[in-house]
Length: 195
Length: 292
Image (cartoon, rainbow over all chains, first blue to last red; front, side, top):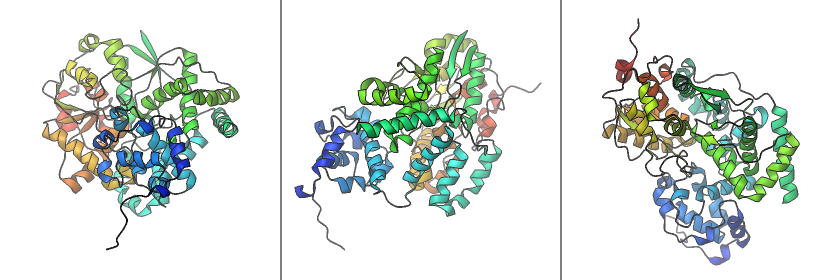
Protein backbone atom coordinates (compact mmCIF):
# COMPACT_ATOMS: atom_id res chain seq x y z
CA UNK A 1 0.00 0.00 0.00
CA UNK A 2 1.47 3.30 -1.06
CA UNK A 3 1.65 5.96 1.61
CA UNK A 4 0.46 9.37 0.43
CA UNK A 5 0.47 12.78 2.01
CA UNK A 6 -3.16 13.61 2.72
CA UNK A 7 -3.00 17.34 3.28
CA UNK A 8 -2.02 20.09 0.90
CA UNK A 9 0.73 22.68 1.42
CA UNK A 10 0.28 26.32 0.69
CA UNK A 11 3.19 26.35 -1.76
CA UNK A 12 1.19 24.11 -4.05
CA UNK A 13 -1.38 26.84 -4.60
CA UNK A 14 -1.64 28.66 -7.89
CA UNK A 15 -2.85 32.14 -6.89
CA UNK A 16 -3.52 33.05 -10.49
CA UNK A 17 -5.92 30.16 -10.84
CA UNK A 18 -7.63 31.20 -7.62
CA UNK A 19 -8.12 34.68 -9.06
CA UNK A 20 -9.47 33.26 -12.29
CA UNK A 21 -12.04 31.16 -10.38
CA UNK A 22 -13.31 34.24 -8.52
CA UNK A 23 -13.67 36.03 -11.86
CA UNK A 24 -15.76 33.51 -13.81
CA UNK A 25 -19.47 34.06 -14.34
CA UNK A 26 -21.19 32.64 -11.27
CA UNK A 27 -17.98 32.57 -9.23
CA UNK A 28 -18.13 36.18 -8.04
CA UNK A 29 -19.03 35.20 -4.50
CA UNK A 30 -16.85 32.11 -4.26
CA UNK A 31 -14.76 33.71 -1.52
CA UNK A 32 -17.90 34.00 0.62
CA UNK A 33 -18.21 30.21 0.89
CA UNK A 34 -18.60 29.15 4.52
CA UNK A 35 -18.02 25.45 3.77
CA UNK A 36 -21.44 24.52 5.11
CA UNK A 37 -21.72 21.57 2.75
CA UNK A 38 -25.30 22.07 1.55
CA UNK A 39 -24.00 21.76 -2.01
CA UNK A 40 -22.58 18.32 -1.29
CA UNK A 41 -25.58 17.19 0.70
CA UNK A 42 -28.00 18.12 -2.06
CA UNK A 43 -25.85 16.82 -4.93
CA UNK A 44 -27.25 13.55 -6.32
CA UNK A 45 -23.86 12.73 -7.83
CA UNK A 46 -21.65 13.44 -4.83
CA UNK A 47 -21.55 9.75 -3.77
CA UNK A 48 -19.54 9.13 -6.94
CA UNK A 49 -17.21 12.11 -6.74
CA UNK A 50 -13.55 12.09 -5.79
CA UNK A 51 -14.04 15.51 -4.19
CA UNK A 52 -17.50 16.57 -3.07
CA UNK A 53 -18.67 19.96 -4.38
CA UNK A 54 -17.88 21.59 -1.01
CA UNK A 55 -14.27 20.40 -1.13
CA UNK A 56 -13.92 21.20 -4.81
CA UNK A 57 -15.13 24.77 -4.34
CA UNK A 58 -12.69 25.24 -1.48
CA UNK A 59 -9.79 23.78 -3.46
CA UNK A 60 -10.68 25.83 -6.53
CA UNK A 61 -10.85 29.16 -4.71
CA UNK A 62 -7.55 28.43 -2.96
CA UNK A 63 -5.91 27.66 -6.32
CA UNK A 64 -5.22 23.93 -6.27
CA UNK A 65 -5.48 23.89 -9.99
CA UNK A 66 -4.15 20.45 -10.87
CA UNK A 67 -6.35 18.53 -8.44
CA UNK A 68 -9.41 20.52 -9.40
CA UNK A 69 -9.06 20.29 -13.18
CA UNK A 70 -8.06 16.63 -13.00
CA UNK A 71 -10.98 15.63 -10.79
CA UNK A 72 -13.90 13.43 -11.82
CA UNK A 73 -16.19 15.75 -9.90
CA UNK A 74 -16.49 18.33 -12.63
CA UNK A 75 -17.47 15.67 -15.19
CA UNK A 76 -20.00 14.07 -12.90
CA UNK A 77 -21.92 17.32 -12.51
CA UNK A 78 -25.14 17.06 -14.53
CA UNK A 79 -26.07 20.74 -14.02
CA UNK A 80 -29.18 19.93 -12.00
CA UNK A 81 -28.69 23.20 -10.05
CA UNK A 82 -29.46 21.69 -6.62
CA UNK A 83 -26.27 23.21 -5.17
CA UNK A 84 -26.93 26.60 -6.74
CA UNK A 85 -30.41 26.73 -5.23
CA UNK A 86 -29.22 25.53 -1.80
CA UNK A 87 -26.16 27.75 -1.40
CA UNK A 88 -26.83 30.23 1.44
CA UNK A 89 -23.98 32.41 0.14
CA UNK A 90 -25.53 32.56 -3.33
CA UNK A 91 -22.55 31.04 -5.09
CA UNK A 92 -23.59 29.69 -8.48
CA UNK A 93 -21.82 26.39 -8.03
CA UNK A 94 -23.20 24.95 -11.28
CA UNK A 95 -21.72 27.84 -13.25
CA UNK A 96 -18.36 27.35 -11.54
CA UNK A 97 -18.47 23.66 -12.52
CA UNK A 98 -19.10 24.69 -16.14
CA UNK A 99 -16.15 27.08 -16.04
CA UNK A 100 -13.91 24.32 -14.66
CA UNK A 101 -15.03 21.92 -17.41
CA UNK A 102 -14.20 24.48 -20.07
CA UNK A 103 -10.82 25.16 -18.50
CA UNK A 104 -10.02 21.44 -18.29
CA UNK A 105 -10.87 21.00 -21.98
CA UNK A 106 -8.83 24.10 -22.91
CA UNK A 107 -5.84 22.88 -20.92
CA UNK A 108 -6.30 19.34 -22.22
CA UNK A 109 -6.18 17.81 -18.75
CA UNK A 110 -9.31 15.67 -18.71
CA UNK A 111 -8.97 11.86 -18.60
CA UNK A 112 -8.31 10.56 -22.11
CA UNK A 113 -11.14 8.84 -23.97
CA UNK A 114 -13.38 9.93 -21.13
CA UNK A 115 -16.76 10.06 -22.87
CA UNK A 116 -18.16 13.24 -21.34
CA UNK A 117 -15.80 15.77 -22.97
CA UNK A 118 -16.15 13.78 -26.20
CA UNK A 119 -19.93 14.09 -25.99
CA UNK A 120 -19.61 17.83 -25.38
CA UNK A 121 -17.30 18.41 -28.32
CA UNK A 122 -19.22 16.20 -30.77
CA UNK A 123 -22.39 17.98 -29.70
CA UNK A 124 -20.76 21.35 -30.28
CA UNK A 125 -19.40 20.41 -33.67
CA UNK A 126 -22.80 19.17 -34.81
CA UNK A 127 -24.54 22.37 -33.77
CA UNK A 128 -21.92 24.49 -35.52
CA UNK A 129 -22.42 22.53 -38.73
CA UNK A 130 -26.18 22.07 -38.72
CA UNK A 131 -27.71 24.34 -36.11
CA UNK A 132 -29.62 21.39 -34.68
CA UNK A 133 -28.82 18.09 -33.06
CA UNK A 134 -29.92 14.75 -34.48
CA UNK A 135 -29.77 12.53 -31.41
CA UNK A 136 -29.25 9.24 -33.24
CA UNK A 137 -26.11 10.49 -35.01
CA UNK A 138 -24.77 12.16 -31.89
CA UNK A 139 -25.03 8.94 -29.87
CA UNK A 140 -23.45 6.97 -32.69
CA UNK A 141 -20.49 9.33 -33.03
CA UNK A 142 -19.78 9.41 -29.30
CA UNK A 143 -19.80 5.64 -29.02
CA UNK A 144 -17.61 5.23 -32.08
CA UNK A 145 -15.03 7.45 -30.44
CA UNK A 146 -15.17 6.03 -26.94
CA UNK A 147 -16.74 2.62 -26.55
CA UNK A 148 -17.47 0.72 -29.74
CA UNK A 149 -18.02 -2.49 -27.78
CA UNK A 150 -20.83 -0.97 -25.75
CA UNK A 151 -22.55 0.14 -28.92
CA UNK A 152 -23.01 -3.50 -29.89
CA UNK A 153 -24.57 -4.25 -26.52
CA UNK A 154 -27.12 -1.55 -27.19
CA UNK A 155 -28.27 -2.82 -30.57
CA UNK A 156 -31.48 -4.29 -29.11
CA UNK A 157 -32.54 -1.01 -27.53
CA UNK A 158 -31.36 0.88 -30.62
CA UNK A 159 -33.60 -1.14 -32.90
CA UNK A 160 -36.56 -0.73 -30.54
CA UNK A 161 -36.06 3.02 -30.60
CA UNK A 162 -35.68 2.99 -34.35
CA UNK A 163 -38.87 1.02 -34.93
CA UNK A 164 -40.85 3.18 -32.51
CA UNK A 165 -39.83 6.18 -34.61
CA UNK A 166 -37.72 7.75 -31.86
CA UNK A 167 -34.37 7.47 -33.64
CA UNK A 168 -34.75 9.20 -36.97
CA UNK A 169 -31.68 8.93 -39.16
CA UNK A 170 -32.43 11.94 -41.33
CA UNK A 171 -30.12 14.70 -40.11
CA UNK A 172 -31.92 17.81 -38.85
CA UNK A 173 -30.69 21.21 -39.94
CA UNK A 174 -31.68 24.84 -39.86
CA UNK A 175 -32.14 26.82 -43.07
CA UNK A 176 -29.99 29.85 -42.35
CA UNK A 177 -26.80 28.13 -41.29
CA UNK A 178 -24.80 31.06 -42.54
CA UNK A 179 -26.49 33.44 -40.12
CA UNK A 180 -25.79 31.16 -37.19
CA UNK A 181 -22.15 30.72 -38.15
CA UNK A 182 -21.71 34.47 -38.64
CA UNK A 183 -23.17 35.03 -35.18
CA UNK A 184 -20.94 32.45 -33.50
CA UNK A 185 -17.83 33.61 -35.36
CA UNK A 186 -18.46 37.27 -34.52
CA UNK A 187 -18.86 36.47 -30.82
CA UNK A 188 -15.70 34.38 -30.93
CA UNK A 189 -13.66 37.12 -32.62
CA UNK A 190 -14.78 39.85 -30.25
CA UNK A 191 -14.13 37.61 -27.28
CA UNK A 192 -10.50 37.44 -28.34
CA UNK A 193 -10.37 41.20 -28.86
CA UNK A 194 -11.88 41.79 -25.40
CA UNK A 195 -9.46 39.39 -23.71
CA UNK B 1 -58.02 32.23 -29.15
CA UNK B 2 -54.68 32.13 -27.32
CA UNK B 3 -51.54 32.08 -29.45
CA UNK B 4 -47.96 31.22 -28.62
CA UNK B 5 -44.72 30.76 -30.45
CA UNK B 6 -43.59 27.17 -30.25
CA UNK B 7 -39.97 26.13 -29.77
CA UNK B 8 -39.87 22.31 -30.07
CA UNK B 9 -36.14 21.79 -29.54
CA UNK B 10 -34.14 18.88 -30.93
CA UNK B 11 -35.40 16.15 -28.58
CA UNK B 12 -39.06 16.63 -29.48
CA UNK B 13 -38.05 15.82 -33.05
CA UNK B 14 -36.14 12.72 -31.94
CA UNK B 15 -36.43 10.58 -28.85
CA UNK B 16 -39.14 12.83 -27.41
CA UNK B 17 -41.47 12.71 -30.41
CA UNK B 18 -44.36 11.53 -28.26
CA UNK B 19 -44.04 14.67 -26.13
CA UNK B 20 -44.62 16.82 -29.20
CA UNK B 21 -47.49 14.67 -30.46
CA UNK B 22 -49.33 14.73 -27.14
CA UNK B 23 -48.57 18.40 -26.45
CA UNK B 24 -49.95 19.50 -29.81
CA UNK B 25 -53.06 17.36 -29.32
CA UNK B 26 -53.74 18.78 -25.85
CA UNK B 27 -53.22 22.40 -26.89
CA UNK B 28 -55.43 21.92 -29.92
CA UNK B 29 -58.20 20.49 -27.75
CA UNK B 30 -57.92 23.59 -25.59
CA UNK B 31 -58.17 25.88 -28.64
CA UNK B 32 -54.63 27.19 -28.22
CA UNK B 33 -52.80 28.05 -31.40
CA UNK B 34 -49.09 27.28 -31.63
CA UNK B 35 -46.92 28.83 -34.32
CA UNK B 36 -43.56 27.13 -34.71
CA UNK B 37 -40.64 29.55 -34.37
CA UNK B 38 -39.26 29.77 -37.87
CA UNK B 39 -35.76 28.37 -38.36
CA UNK B 40 -35.12 27.83 -34.64
CA UNK B 41 -31.75 26.38 -33.74
CA UNK B 42 -30.58 24.07 -30.96
CA UNK B 43 -30.59 25.80 -27.56
CA UNK B 44 -27.18 24.33 -26.71
CA UNK B 45 -28.63 22.23 -23.86
CA UNK B 46 -26.30 21.44 -20.98
CA UNK B 47 -23.38 20.37 -23.14
CA UNK B 48 -22.54 23.52 -25.08
CA UNK B 49 -21.92 25.51 -21.91
CA UNK B 50 -19.05 23.13 -21.18
CA UNK B 51 -17.37 24.02 -24.48
CA UNK B 52 -17.90 27.71 -25.05
CA UNK B 53 -19.75 29.96 -22.66
CA UNK B 54 -20.31 33.00 -24.84
CA UNK B 55 -21.31 30.98 -27.87
CA UNK B 56 -23.70 29.02 -25.68
CA UNK B 57 -25.40 32.32 -24.87
CA UNK B 58 -25.28 33.25 -28.55
CA UNK B 59 -27.02 30.01 -29.59
CA UNK B 60 -29.85 30.67 -27.17
CA UNK B 61 -29.72 34.35 -28.10
CA UNK B 62 -30.51 33.73 -31.77
CA UNK B 63 -33.73 31.99 -30.77
CA UNK B 64 -34.64 34.80 -28.38
CA UNK B 65 -34.01 37.34 -31.12
CA UNK B 66 -36.06 35.43 -33.70
CA UNK B 67 -38.90 35.12 -31.19
CA UNK B 68 -38.84 38.79 -30.18
CA UNK B 69 -39.76 39.85 -33.70
CA UNK B 70 -43.00 37.89 -33.39
CA UNK B 71 -44.09 39.56 -30.13
CA UNK B 72 -45.56 36.35 -28.73
CA UNK B 73 -44.61 34.32 -25.65
CA UNK B 74 -42.24 31.50 -26.51
CA UNK B 75 -43.36 28.03 -25.42
CA UNK B 76 -40.44 25.72 -24.62
CA UNK B 77 -41.63 22.25 -23.49
CA UNK B 78 -38.20 20.63 -23.04
CA UNK B 79 -36.66 21.28 -19.63
CA UNK B 80 -33.17 21.92 -20.98
CA UNK B 81 -34.45 24.36 -23.62
CA UNK B 82 -36.64 26.10 -21.06
CA UNK B 83 -33.77 26.60 -18.67
CA UNK B 84 -31.14 27.54 -21.24
CA UNK B 85 -33.35 30.15 -22.92
CA UNK B 86 -34.36 31.60 -19.56
CA UNK B 87 -30.81 31.63 -18.31
CA UNK B 88 -29.43 33.29 -21.43
CA UNK B 89 -32.03 35.99 -21.15
CA UNK B 90 -31.19 36.65 -17.50
CA UNK B 91 -27.42 36.63 -17.98
CA UNK B 92 -27.64 39.01 -20.93
CA UNK B 93 -29.36 41.43 -18.54
CA UNK B 94 -27.15 40.73 -15.56
CA UNK B 95 -23.68 40.59 -17.12
CA UNK B 96 -22.75 43.54 -19.34
CA UNK B 97 -19.86 41.56 -20.82
CA UNK B 98 -22.30 38.94 -22.12
CA UNK B 99 -24.63 41.59 -23.56
CA UNK B 100 -21.76 43.42 -25.22
CA UNK B 101 -20.34 40.35 -26.93
CA UNK B 102 -23.74 39.19 -28.10
CA UNK B 103 -24.47 42.64 -29.51
CA UNK B 104 -21.43 42.31 -31.76
CA UNK B 105 -22.67 38.91 -32.86
CA UNK B 106 -26.27 39.99 -33.42
CA UNK B 107 -25.15 42.96 -35.48
CA UNK B 108 -22.90 40.82 -37.70
CA UNK B 109 -25.72 38.30 -38.21
CA UNK B 110 -28.38 40.92 -38.94
CA UNK B 111 -30.37 40.23 -35.76
CA UNK B 112 -31.71 42.50 -33.05
CA UNK B 113 -32.62 41.63 -29.49
CA UNK B 114 -33.77 44.03 -26.79
CA UNK B 115 -34.54 41.51 -24.06
CA UNK B 116 -38.33 41.30 -24.09
CA UNK B 117 -38.95 37.69 -25.17
CA UNK B 118 -40.91 35.74 -22.56
CA UNK B 119 -40.01 32.07 -22.28
CA UNK B 120 -42.86 29.95 -20.96
CA UNK B 121 -43.34 26.33 -19.95
CA UNK B 122 -46.46 24.34 -20.90
CA UNK B 123 -47.23 23.74 -17.19
CA UNK B 124 -47.20 27.51 -16.63
CA UNK B 125 -49.47 28.19 -19.61
CA UNK B 126 -51.90 25.40 -18.72
CA UNK B 127 -52.23 26.47 -15.08
CA UNK B 128 -52.01 30.25 -15.35
CA UNK B 129 -53.28 31.20 -18.83
CA UNK B 130 -55.82 28.47 -19.47
CA UNK B 131 -56.77 27.46 -15.94
CA UNK B 132 -57.96 24.33 -14.23
CA UNK B 133 -61.67 25.02 -14.84
CA UNK B 134 -61.17 25.11 -18.59
CA UNK B 135 -59.16 21.89 -18.41
CA UNK B 136 -61.78 20.14 -16.26
CA UNK B 137 -64.43 21.18 -18.78
CA UNK B 138 -62.63 19.28 -21.57
CA UNK B 139 -62.41 15.97 -19.75
CA UNK B 140 -64.22 13.18 -21.55
CA UNK B 141 -62.74 10.22 -19.74
CA UNK B 142 -61.51 10.99 -16.22
CA UNK B 143 -58.42 9.08 -15.14
CA UNK B 144 -60.27 7.79 -12.09
CA UNK B 145 -58.24 5.51 -9.89
CA UNK B 146 -54.98 6.00 -11.76
CA UNK B 147 -52.12 6.50 -9.29
CA UNK B 148 -49.45 8.80 -10.69
CA UNK B 149 -46.00 9.78 -9.43
CA UNK B 150 -45.45 13.35 -10.68
CA UNK B 151 -41.81 13.64 -11.70
CA UNK B 152 -40.51 17.14 -12.53
CA UNK B 153 -36.77 16.55 -12.65
CA UNK B 154 -34.28 19.42 -12.62
CA UNK B 155 -34.17 22.67 -14.52
CA UNK B 156 -37.88 23.48 -14.59
CA UNK B 157 -38.03 24.91 -11.08
CA UNK B 158 -34.26 25.05 -10.57
CA UNK B 159 -32.55 27.43 -10.39
CA UNK B 160 -35.43 29.71 -11.42
CA UNK B 161 -38.79 29.19 -9.74
CA UNK B 162 -40.73 31.21 -12.28
CA UNK B 163 -44.16 29.62 -11.91
CA UNK B 164 -43.91 26.92 -9.25
CA UNK B 165 -42.12 26.04 -6.01
CA UNK B 166 -38.46 25.08 -6.11
CA UNK B 167 -38.53 22.36 -3.48
CA UNK B 168 -41.93 20.85 -4.01
CA UNK B 169 -43.57 21.93 -7.26
CA UNK B 170 -47.28 21.17 -7.58
CA UNK B 171 -48.44 22.47 -10.97
CA UNK B 172 -48.40 19.04 -12.65
CA UNK B 173 -50.06 17.53 -9.56
CA UNK B 174 -52.92 20.01 -9.91
CA UNK B 175 -53.34 19.42 -13.64
CA UNK B 176 -53.45 15.65 -13.32
CA UNK B 177 -55.80 15.83 -10.35
CA UNK B 178 -58.06 18.08 -12.45
CA UNK B 179 -58.42 15.26 -14.99
CA UNK B 180 -59.25 12.73 -12.29
CA UNK B 181 -55.92 11.07 -11.51
CA UNK B 182 -54.72 10.31 -8.01
CA UNK B 183 -51.36 11.89 -7.17
CA UNK B 184 -49.05 10.00 -4.84
CA UNK B 185 -46.68 11.93 -2.62
CA UNK B 186 -43.35 11.66 -4.41
CA UNK B 187 -40.58 13.39 -2.49
CA UNK B 188 -38.03 12.71 -5.26
CA UNK B 189 -40.06 14.74 -7.73
CA UNK B 190 -37.25 17.20 -8.46
CA UNK B 191 -34.30 14.86 -8.09
CA UNK B 192 -31.99 14.57 -11.09
CA UNK B 193 -32.38 11.57 -13.44
CA UNK B 194 -28.68 11.68 -14.27
CA UNK B 195 -29.08 13.46 -17.59
CA UNK B 196 -26.63 12.14 -20.14
CA UNK B 197 -24.67 10.18 -17.52
CA UNK B 198 -26.36 6.94 -18.56
CA UNK B 199 -24.56 7.28 -21.88
CA UNK B 200 -21.22 8.40 -20.50
CA UNK B 201 -20.93 6.69 -17.09
CA UNK B 202 -23.50 3.88 -17.28
CA UNK B 203 -23.28 2.53 -13.72
CA UNK B 204 -23.81 6.00 -12.27
CA UNK B 205 -26.72 6.84 -14.55
CA UNK B 206 -28.40 3.48 -13.94
CA UNK B 207 -28.30 3.90 -10.19
CA UNK B 208 -29.98 7.33 -10.33
CA UNK B 209 -32.64 5.95 -12.68
CA UNK B 210 -33.23 3.00 -10.38
CA UNK B 211 -33.67 5.13 -7.26
CA UNK B 212 -36.39 7.20 -8.93
CA UNK B 213 -38.32 4.21 -10.25
CA UNK B 214 -38.04 2.24 -7.04
CA UNK B 215 -39.40 5.12 -4.99
CA UNK B 216 -42.29 5.61 -7.40
CA UNK B 217 -43.17 1.95 -6.89
CA UNK B 218 -42.81 2.16 -3.12
CA UNK B 219 -45.24 5.08 -3.11
CA UNK B 220 -47.81 3.00 -4.94
CA UNK B 221 -47.67 4.77 -8.30
CA UNK B 222 -48.83 2.79 -11.33
CA UNK B 223 -47.23 5.21 -13.72
CA UNK B 224 -44.58 7.93 -13.62
CA UNK B 225 -45.51 11.22 -15.27
CA UNK B 226 -42.63 13.29 -16.70
CA UNK B 227 -42.23 16.72 -18.27
CA UNK B 228 -38.78 16.28 -19.81
CA UNK B 229 -37.70 14.28 -22.86
CA UNK B 230 -34.41 13.23 -21.27
CA UNK B 231 -36.05 12.11 -18.01
CA UNK B 232 -38.61 10.13 -19.98
CA UNK B 233 -35.92 8.56 -22.15
CA UNK B 234 -33.73 7.58 -19.20
CA UNK B 235 -36.52 6.14 -17.07
CA UNK B 236 -38.18 4.36 -20.00
CA UNK B 237 -35.39 3.09 -22.22
CA UNK B 238 -33.01 2.00 -19.44
CA UNK B 239 -35.58 0.69 -17.00
CA UNK B 240 -34.95 -2.90 -17.99
CA UNK B 241 -31.19 -2.52 -17.56
CA UNK B 242 -31.56 -0.72 -14.23
CA UNK B 243 -33.90 -3.44 -13.01
CA UNK B 244 -31.48 -6.21 -13.95
CA UNK B 245 -28.64 -4.49 -12.15
CA UNK B 246 -30.31 -3.18 -9.00
CA UNK B 247 -33.59 -5.09 -8.60
CA UNK B 248 -36.79 -5.13 -10.58
CA UNK B 249 -38.63 -1.88 -11.21
CA UNK B 250 -41.49 -2.11 -13.62
CA UNK B 251 -43.29 1.17 -14.13
CA UNK B 252 -44.41 2.81 -17.38
CA UNK B 253 -43.09 6.36 -17.78
CA UNK B 254 -45.22 8.78 -19.78
CA UNK B 255 -45.46 12.49 -20.50
CA UNK B 256 -48.00 14.46 -18.48
CA UNK B 257 -49.44 15.63 -21.79
CA UNK B 258 -50.17 12.01 -22.72
CA UNK B 259 -52.22 11.61 -19.54
CA UNK B 260 -54.08 14.88 -20.15
CA UNK B 261 -54.66 13.76 -23.75
CA UNK B 262 -56.15 10.43 -22.68
CA UNK B 263 -58.55 12.24 -20.39
CA UNK B 264 -59.48 14.54 -23.30
CA UNK B 265 -60.43 11.48 -25.33
CA UNK B 266 -57.46 11.05 -27.67
CA UNK B 267 -56.30 7.55 -28.57
CA UNK B 268 -53.00 6.02 -27.44
CA UNK B 269 -51.75 6.24 -31.00
CA UNK B 270 -52.59 9.93 -31.38
CA UNK B 271 -50.64 10.62 -28.19
CA UNK B 272 -47.57 8.61 -29.19
CA UNK B 273 -48.05 6.15 -26.33
CA UNK B 274 -47.08 3.30 -28.63
CA UNK B 275 -43.55 4.70 -28.80
CA UNK B 276 -42.85 3.70 -25.20
CA UNK B 277 -40.21 1.05 -24.57
CA UNK B 278 -41.95 -0.02 -21.35
CA UNK B 279 -45.51 -0.36 -22.56
CA UNK B 280 -48.11 1.66 -20.70
CA UNK B 281 -50.92 -0.36 -22.24
CA UNK B 282 -51.65 -2.58 -19.23
CA UNK B 283 -52.14 0.43 -16.96
CA UNK B 284 -53.79 2.85 -19.35
CA UNK B 285 -55.91 0.64 -21.60
CA UNK B 286 -59.10 1.26 -19.62
CA UNK B 287 -58.84 4.98 -20.31
CA UNK B 288 -58.46 4.59 -24.06
CA UNK B 289 -61.38 5.39 -26.34
CA UNK B 290 -63.36 2.32 -27.36
CA UNK B 291 -63.03 1.63 -31.08
CA UNK B 292 -66.28 2.21 -32.92
